[in-house]
Length: 146
Image (tube, rainbow, N blue to C red; front, side, top):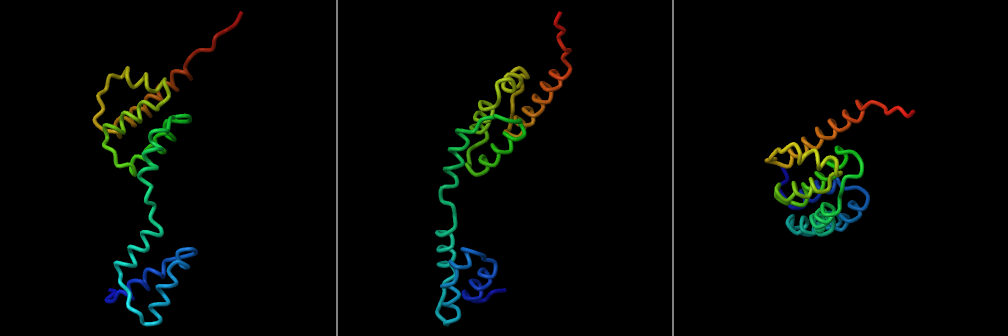
């Protein structure tokens, strides 16, 4: 579809907006001036300028610091967002996930005596444990004071 390096760069530039469009302007100028362009060099420059080189490290730090303060679902979503980026194996993620849950959820999971085979199954159990705990609290009769 794009037989020359210049056509590849020009096509990529069509999708750039704001700062990226400004960044790309020297490449566009080179195309208009008939100067040679190397697609690989363009990609390397693009990555160096816009790729987040510390993303994985920040995800690992976030996983070490995250803990459940709100709902299980909210905690799970936040955890998974960082887990995908960190690149850690399930076993390590499972330990971090369970240890940062609220104590009542941790206790319910331990008492279930389930051996989890994946982070996903552990997270499903955490959600279920929260639902059970919530159901018990809602069903508890009110204490009458004399």
